[in-house]
Length: 322
Ligand SMILES: NC(=O)c1ccc[n+]([C@@H]2O[C@H](COP(=O)([O-])OP(=O)(O)OC[C@H]3O[C@@H](n4cnc5c(N)ncnc54)[C@H](OP(=O)(O)O)[C@@H]3O)[C@@H](O)[C@H]2O)c1
Image 1: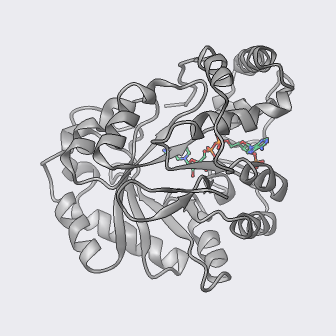
Image 2: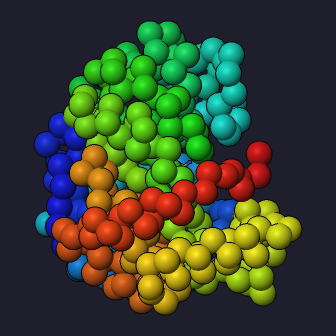
């Protein structure tokens, strides 16, 4: 496993990180805790040292804390998230930070996350939505600085609204931010335009999320794919979207001269070809997926030819239900 600096935090994080939305059992249905625990253990054995979780991911913080405690002496960094107090995703324009991230809410959420995980502190605390209108307003920054001084968090990040990569540029430039978490993948290339260069310039670590477009970039979504009742992917891949995905993935694979089951590897390498990407938080619930994905963290991006081809397959869309 290769490691990269997480901005200017001083942390060195594995190229492949662990995304734990799916194992929490809230919006993804079907994870078995025993299998999730085995998968997390295997990931740590294979060098993964960065795990992304959130207060809003059902049982995820508890499971992550359990696994971390079973690796005493091993350095594994955990980033969690504070949900907005008003419960609105994504953050619409015009909100006062007192409605979303007042200090007492941040502190209460963090305390709940610490209790749920059994951890003494989190390496990164991220706001789960962001609007640049909040820079210089509210008491959130003071609270974050106090929590750092108290040793309950080491670094501060924001996980930005889906498909709004430019919505955090003022905060990136402010110097108050340690990490940004954003969607970035073969289809959604917009972060390359402003966000990734700004993060590189200001030493802000980049945690890439949804690198496989919720499974679209694995070749496993076809018109016949079904998901369990209550799983959010029933909406994400609703209507004719599974056919659209298959067409786009087949075209990508054909252009690259690969089989569709190699698309996941190419998708992860596409993200890792950007030096500004610190770690790629891949959603994984099984040992085989962990083994396949960790093998990609070998320090190699795409070849220049593959990069040119992949770049032609940009497909900006927003399938998230809102
Ligand atoms: N707003 C936010 O802050 C936000 C939103 C979304 C996600 N996130 C974070 O980002 C992480 C990653 O995003 P995500 O989990 O939603 O989606 P993702 O990483 O784009 O895709 C996950 C899907 O890909 C499948 N998969 C993984 N590796 C594979 C492989 N090698 N071959 C075939 N299939 C493979 C997984 O299957 P299995 O599950 O069966 O292993 C799962 O269905 C999340 O877990 C979470 O930590 C944050």
